[in-house]
Image (cartoon, rainbow, N blue to C red; front, top):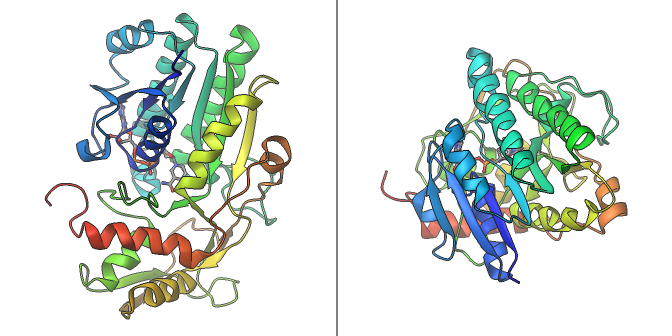
Length: 330
Ligand SMILES: NC(=O)c1ccc[n+]([C@@H]2O[C@H](COP(=O)([O-])OP(=O)(O)OC[C@H]3O[C@@H](n4cnc5c(N)ncnc54)[C@H](O)[C@@H]3O)[C@@H](O)[C@H]2O)c1
């Protein structure tokens, strides 16, 4: 029988790429999304779309009752660190509160496997690199805290109800569908690679570089950019792992790149210079965030296929050049 999956937030950046992969593999996919940051064009025609929010308990109940589900993938969330520090309760209501509602509906309707989009923001200001799963969890933002709350709820849902879960802590998701069908279009955009590309394409005047005095080789902040297709692959591999029990994995390439290295990679790929403006550090920005993905590699065989920054950037640039206004019309 055809496998069948529910994907919350499947109209967003990472979720839409997973939906595409599931459809490519012949699975049936239901997307639940309220389009607060998602795009209709990002939901490929083979998926069934239910437009609505996780705060609607009756809707959740009706959706989950329409099983059986081979797994639920939970991408839907607010994920702006700065916004979460201005309005932390919004994040606890939207991320933690809606997470509780969704997990509860999953338990009541007999879902056995749940995959959460978690985040490196759990780790705040890490003192060791690369970061393994046993690094201290000390979120530096309400956003990170809200994701940690969902991870904790999932621990209880397993302990009490046997709902198996995988918490996948992405570092910096990057790149676009290598087939060119989907890309990255957050509004507002806060992610470095699309911002650099827009500066290179003349869609913004300059790229603001936050901080040039970090203790890193060129003074700019270092992050671990993991290709969205590799994230998708990890989501599918962990499903098998859940037979053994619930898991939490850090997901990155294990290699860090500074802001200036990303700028140079975009300049190489696009053949254009990126105008820069150096400004102060953002409060709470750690100098470096690099994942150790040794655990998921050992337990599931996952390895990133995109290990070269230029290749990651090339897929993002390809999509942006083909879609200068992103999804839809600005
Ligand atoms: N992009 C990254 O680098 C990154 C890094 C770490 C973790 N994450 C996590 O991965 C997930 C996906 O990130 P993304 O970059 O694709 O974000 P995104 O904003 O592109 O996608 C989120 C999707 O969820 C939907 N949504 C939000 N709240 C909803 C609600 N209450 N009800 C229904 N739908 C709702 C949005 O409309 C959107 O389609 C998020 O949970 C995010 O916290 C992302």
